[in-house]
Image (tube, rainbow, N blue to C red; front, top):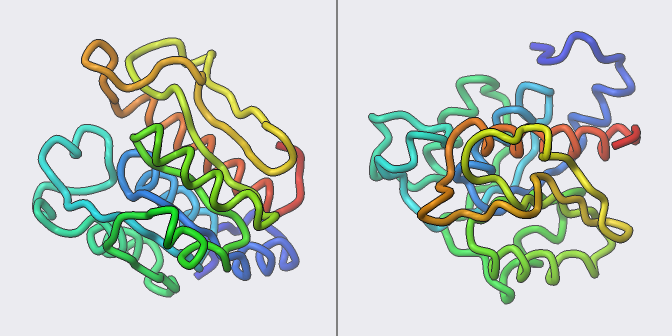
Length: 199
């Protein structure tokens, strides 16, 4: 099945050959993955230590009958409902400075999809020296202000989606619309990098 009939053969070949890492399978990661699969990306490395909880259902690509499942297994099942021919490497573990390169070093591009700012920094510092792009997110919480969210290039290989200001807190919790915007921005950036078009 051709998941993006609007692409030519050469573009489709580049997309299908790409290997994309996604570090974190929560609100950003699970939704970004769904976008990328619908665009025709087939090869992924996905890592997340967590399980699906009821509080995730307001913004993450999971369903009520998946509560308690490891997120990597649940998102894999959902993605395979879109395309059963995916090649998935799943790691139900926490990404650390010790294993980040081992897990994502072979990827053409990696999506940073963590909630924790320290984890975000750790992944970026671990992967950028490899010379491959990292697509991160910052400032995705709360409601409204959609037009403040954009993708910025930082240095040569780091791309940041979101408004870079509105962190997750009791006053600004994560909700589906803004998390979804950032996840879509990340997916769109990954596709631009794969196809070599302007971001």
